[in-house]
Length: 440
Image (cartoon, rainbow, N blue to C red; front, side):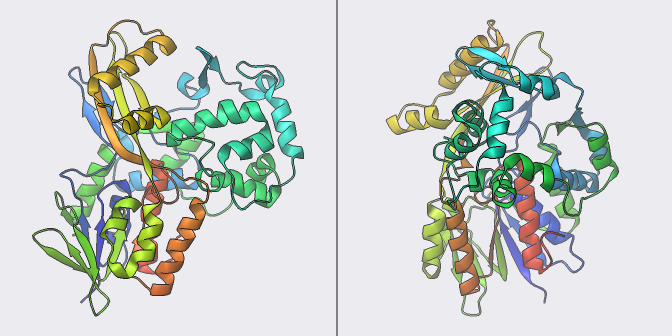
């Protein structure tokens, strides 16, 4: 009989792992186990009363780089090309970026001219930050906080204004706690390899094999900044589920895993409450802290390492205003939400709606009450790659190799929180299980 691979977690990482396992020339038997009644994890789309799509999680996917191209290739393989809604490079949404600082919105500079003149909230032209970056020596520490790295290479203003805002937007985290090596590996590697971020990004671009398809070529030709799907991003996990079913993958919903144990012959027993599964290999695409509580005593060192990978909660508020073509999405999280949680405050929908409406009024000038509001709180949804995160991953990897445990880790807890990163983690997990080259 062939091997049985059980994939834990029906979010986008687990779906991607199952997808690539099922498409192998000689695929194993694949069983996907999801604790809730729906698939897709944090990706969730809801249609409002007037037909508008409300995204309760991510609202777009970036096509840039190899990972962006691989996601578009999967979209094509699923037959979703005609459903793609791109934001092209000549669109105003792609050309304009703003920072809200000191009670005002500031357009970020773009083009050579923008770099050569002062652009609030920055007191000096960003050209000088670039010049400083090119002349700053390589750092010697194996890791560094994002804020420290940016301040050393680009100056205090870029660190406090731009990089701090980026960390809050991507990770809902604090740039003074997050790791540059783990959160922004391309910047860290650029400095290590070329002594400069700017030189590294310039000289390192375009290396390695690039996926190719008509959709990928279109995205490059039209310089897409991001894309979504006509029925909302949840169309992607729904299409993956349909594809998996046609490929013979067993998809179990509403089956939370209660525990994992190793049998004498080296197989896993997956406890699902009133039933069990046997697996030759497990791909875990559930949060690291959740997996740590399921592992058997023999894997205690691994459980300890995984339990230290924490996550923060984020509230997503969609506000629909009369006359507006699209809902306004406000994300509330970070230290503000952590403080409320620590105080034991009631995290009500009314509280989140009030804060979101206040932000829309002060930052966008939307003073009228919204015609429709949808609030969703994602508990512990964004892992925090704090200083030294890479050592936790190295410790986990060394333990798995030394003990020869038939367990592969995937998902947002490890090497990227964006949708493309999660899909790639599932692809690489499948490649390791199959014994093929992850980078092919």
